[in-house]
Amino acid sequence: MALYGVLGDIHGNLEALRAVLAALDARGVRELLCVGDVVGYNADADACAALLRRRGARVILGNHDLIATRRLGFERCSNNARYALARTRRTLARESAEWLATLPERLLVDGEIRIHVDHSGQEVTLARHSSGSVVGEMSVFDDQPRSAGAQATTDTTVRVLRRDRLQAIVHEHPEVLLEFIKNLSQRLRAMDEKLGSAPPTATAATSP
Image (cartoon, rainbow, N blue to C red):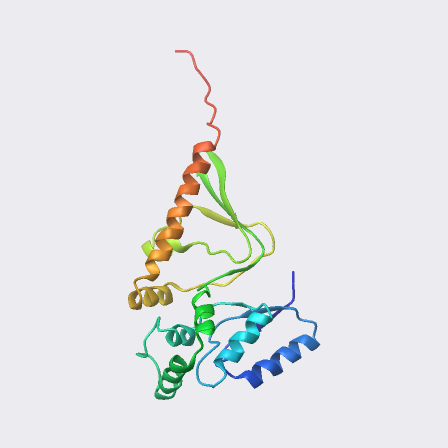
């Protein structure tokens, strides 16, 4: 498994980001993960975003990133955070804002997950998800037992989004639901095709 350098709470601090990347480079780290909050507080949000893109870092959204791109409000911010994020909203370059808008809430970092169900007594593999995929979102919304099993087929690293955080985001920005509905619709269609092509279970004939 790869050696990862994990970054977080960068908050537009370019000098600190450069220092940490130099330290990771010196230790031979080549794979970078960031747990969010690229922007906020400090003045170099655009430079930090550009540097992470150049380095190929895999980044998930933090609350400051959501606020800076107007997908969350200032309601839970301290006075200092509110002031800094208001400035970030005014000064953030379009390229940076568009990049932040592409960042996921959760991410399969490494490995592979197999999604499977029991269909008429036969185990059917519905999908195999690799690095960069999102899984398990249906049960986050309906709070019901999962409709399919998930099995890591290799050593796997997963970032998890808590139900309360996702629900807060959806409450603030209902349009997020459209993306989830689109994703679920595509997966349900794929599941129907898989189950429809599964060979029927053989049954033994018995005489009366």
